[in-house]
Amino acid sequence: MEAHKPATVAELLACPDERVELIGGEIVRRPMARGEHAMVQGPTHDELSPFQRKDGPGGWWIATEISVAYVAQECPSHDLAGWRKEPSPKRPRGVVELTPDWVCEIVSPGHERKDTLTLFLPLQRHRVPFYWLIWPESRTLIAYQLDGEHDRVIATITEPTRVRVPPFDAFEMDLSYVFGE
Image (cartoon, rainbow, N blue to C red; front, side, top):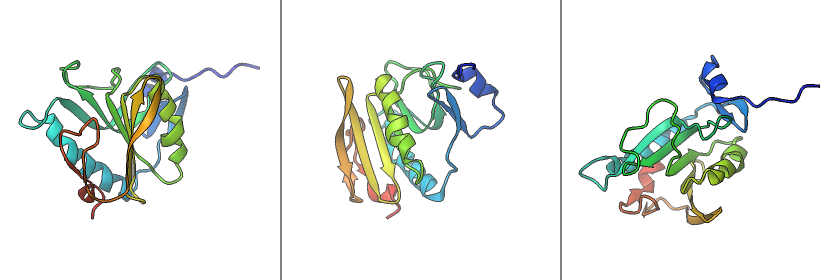
């Protein structure tokens, strides 16, 4: 019996289906995008856009639906991810091989395990400093920050209000806009 050989980023790129990602050496289908997902992802990106502008707090590259190759067998496609411009002055292109400074996933019903565990542990292992989870249905944002070897919750927000959440705490984010209130 032949041992299972983990898939690689090269195999992922050769896959004809574009709605896939590489997690733990397996090419897996991504959840179908739902209206709730898109209606939260766009406003979240809008709210953080000042961090990309020179006339705002600046200093970030923020992208949606971006594939990040952490290692040869790990290339998830993040709903939102950001890199500080200071150490990364060039805009991310293609499949990015640089670990993000921030990742945000919009949690889809039936796929909670993927965002809260399957992705959470590799992001921790690859030392992503900030990880946000947003649940559109319950209008909740939970933010984690890497603290040594483990992540700790730094914010749990369940009210549609204006908030300052690291790493974007230089600016108030309007969660009522994000959640379509």
